[in-house]
Amino acid sequence: MVIMAEDEEAERARLPMLLEAVLGVGTDLELRATLQHLVDSATELVGARHGALGIVDPERPRLTGLFTTGMTEEERARVGPLPRDGDGGLGVPVRVHTQIFGNLHLTGKPGGFTEEDLALLRVLAAQAGIAIGNARLYETARQRERWIEGAAAVTTALLTGESAEDALMTVAEQARILADAAAGVILQPTPEGGMEIVTASTTEDPGELVGTTIRPGSAVLVHLLGGEPVFIEDSSTDPRMTTPVRSRFGPSMMLPLRSGGRLIGTLALPRHRGADPYSAVDRLLASQFASQAALALVLADARHDRERLAVFEDRDRIARDLHDLVVQRLFATEMMLESTRRRAGGSSEEDELLGRAVDELDSTIQEVRTTIFALQQPPAEAPTTFRGRVLRETGGAGVLLGFQPSVRFTGAVDTLVEEPEARKLLAALRGALAAAHRRSAVGRIQVDVGVGDEGAWLRVEDDGTPPTTVTWP
Image (cartoon, rainbow, N blue to C red; front, side, top):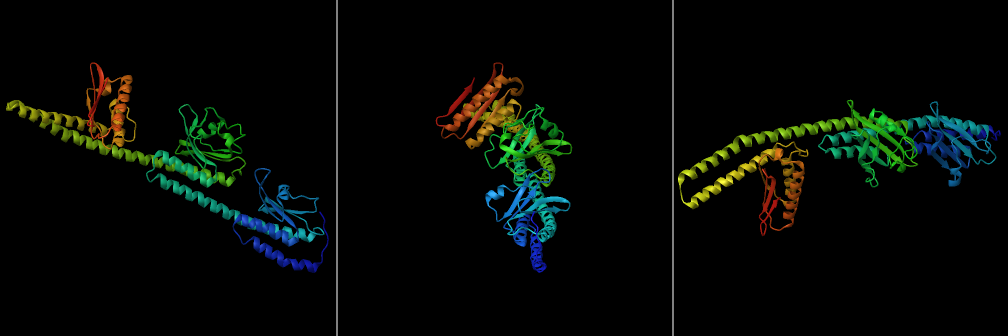
């Protein structure tokens, strides 16, 4: 390093410049603006042509940022993480408390640098360390505020009635945005002991992500299933990562969604290859977000369960009322009409009218009983009984048709229809309903399903032009 004495009066003239530089560095709470101002002020203060401030990663031997003045791109590429001697330059470390935050390096002063230049630069670096510490605290506070607001938004969204799939997507998408990640994915345990991606939020096509699995026995799974987070420096090279999509990503966080001892799944936040690694603050805030999101998911699930229970209780009450009041009254009316027809001995026309009335009542009773059964099915669950599967098929067709087909059951279909026969009947039913949908002027469909000594049977009749009847087998 070249050091030469300078005139004392000239040094006093630079004191106002030093004070201005110190004040300028400390006036901005935005970290990047503070760092750039430090480089510019230091270069001007000592009369250098070029200045560079390299930000050192406290956890790894690498630069995480570079701020320069008066340098070309080629010169920027040659800047290292430490001050360099022997090139006519002047370098000092910039410390925040006792930790080296970065290194300030100046070059290109005509005549070389002096001891006074070094002293002035040290004073500026010391004051800059204080300003940088304040700016970092401010940036961390803003970052923490964003994560808290994001967690609150997730909780609000989950507790306002979203479905299970939408709830997981809300968590994944909000976390991806907050972490500045390439993707936000939710993995859930599989019956085989692994984990599978069930939800993915990404700016690219998420198709190949959903369905990707982590095989049982993976080193990563040991931590995740035990409720421990996993932090990855580079997904594409880390031997613990075994999924086929790992080559697309670099730094990653895998955070268990755990609440009350229950593991709901894992929130993974991978960044693109070559992106900045996650800092300690990033990891802490994301872990806190995952804990709150897991609690919100549990509360939302419990809320949905209570709502489903309330709906089921309501439907069960309606079904009981229908059975106890409507069906019994209809059945009594049918009996009275049948008895009247037998005693009256009227004309054939009157007998026919009474017979038709009895048949209509019998048909109405069957439809009411079918409705009662449908009401007693657990809501939002796939039916497991044969009767329930038939009703699901007709209910789904009703959405396309614009009206609900009438369904009547004869015999103990749930106990007497075997599974192979049930699948064939349901396939025939789907075909008949699809054919009816393609035909014009269909406004009513009657579906009759029954079982007898010769097995199950199906009859689908519509009022199209002309009317069509499909029977099976």
